[in-house]
Image 1 (cartoon, rainbow, N blue to C red):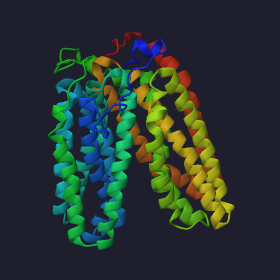
Image 2 (cartoon, rainbow, N blue to C red; image 1 turned 30 degrees about the vertical axis):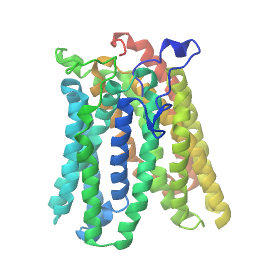
Image 3 (cartoon, rainbow, N blue to C red; image 1 turned 90 degrees about the horizontal axis):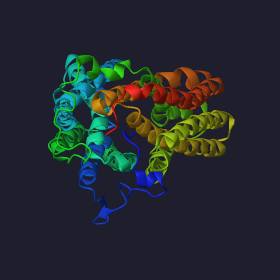
Length: 434
């Protein structure tokens, strides 16, 4: 997602210095903002990876809540988070993305810590709605934050680097979380919850210290004097909303490794259960290896459009490969599922890089908070709808269901090009990009 085009040097055949090319001490980027953002991302991802495998189990096994009721509560919390995305983005425009981002991260940490005090369903609802709502609302604010602190010419590559850091942190955290799962004690769960809470609250203290990029300067309130209608312009920008919707459809793919494929493997194939873990590892490793490279080719609108179009087609191909695995022997089923997962990884890194670019380039630079709030809310909605959509298609109807998903992905990807042309034709009223 980038607000502006790369520098004229890139347009003339040269290229700006890649965001993560120069390392401090051989490990971290030399750019101060990206270096600090990398540390914050690593800490937070480690905490999330710790908590991710055992969150639901804590509420069901330790607190003693009904699994269906917990699922319903998580769904309600997700809906609150989607609804909070746009107001949170507007707040970032009004008071600054660094300040609002720090408050959201800090609030998420406190709400996470409150999980240790939950002893009833009412307490669970209050805690999980606050924690999930604040965390999901922060997604759009993070987009606005990156618009303020990362140089425009290298912003997409920087976000790709941060996504790699996220995958590594989640992977390490997940491995450590498995130790807590094996212990399966109240103390182990409590320790993980507190560490996850600290992974939000601690970095929140450092977010205001992120240096602003030169194109932003020290402006504290970007559009405080703008007319009220203009402050909410993103919700009236139909072409931008259409691009957001198409991106949300492609985002459904993120639920396949976590929800769709584990269910498919167990219920519909002869592959061993551990195949689900294998596919998740394949996904994490390949994303870490490919994301930055792909982002370099998708940092301008034409490249982003091509990336999104190819992503839809590759997702359709991966759906077809997944469907074939149902009629194969265990060994061939594993090979087929792995091949599908590899194809999906290429689709994932393409759609991520393309989405970052379009989310910034098609936005009004005077209202990044609310624009990134809208775009983030679309992503959250896609991820929320994903499990149910995959279940009622592929899991319920087999090959036919996979075909429906494949067509949906392909159509969304191919629709990006005409929709972006519409946005560019209709975008004269937007402010000049930062």
